[in-house]
Image 1 (cartoon, rainbow, N blue to C red):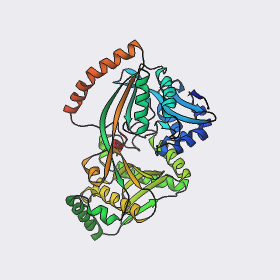
Image 2: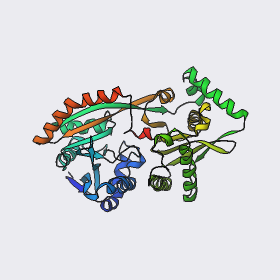
Image 3: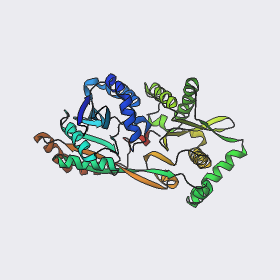
Image 4: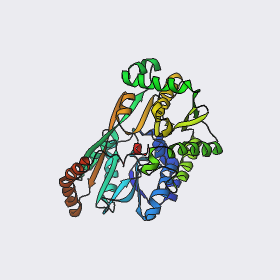
Length: 383
């Protein structure tokens, strides 16, 4: 029997060297997010983690089985509540990149016990994974492995993410949407078409120059929307356009990039920046020109994209990535929960912090709730 071995990667260069084994594990795993592949995790770390303190904040844990990987999870240091240093996944509101990769054919209890031993030895008093699909088999198995080792864990559900199952005909799917939604989308489309043609353009296999051009057009649309006044647009945030440009070029090189523009009289009025991998289409960033708001251009774009997915062979599932708002709920056929997983190693200080967290977190959440709902930590909030 091949022995399992824990390996710790603490540099981006070493992560890139391990990319072939990492990506083979990703391909075998149930994780379909293409941004969880090694190169895009490395790009995330370079952009978001290194500028906050350097490579010493990086801890990538891998369970090796011979020449291959059986499990992996990328961690970086950050501060929660602005004071406490914790270990978190390589995941934030700009891009989801960190995930738990697990070989489905491996001996999960044995593999995850090794991984849990590595998590316990990380230098942070708590591990604080803000955005985890905690009901998936891989995360449930890890939580069980942590409990078996005596590590305290706490899971707090935060929101759900909607999905659309692509099967049958689009007409049948659309007929099941709420009547008010169907009427609103139809009315918006008819009103736009009276003033000129409405066309969906999907860049499925763009070259580098076209990627740059289309991305610029998309984020200029975002800049004309509500987010410019609120702050947080890509073009209004230093370095973010370059981050997405690098990411999009790599996704395109793998054949995963999907960049869609809804045009009215050949003018882009709405966009969607998404990815397709392992049979799933991820609808990541969506925006529209505020001048066209009364027509519901975001919904028109979504309708056209979902119709196109029904009309030709391709992804069997659409994942909306962000919190399940009322608008997304009307398009979704199912959903899954995202939550915060907090892990306390078997150390006196860590146990005390976990006790304090369990006591204070409900109070803090109540205070935040009294100010109105917020999903600022969620990838979908970038929409």
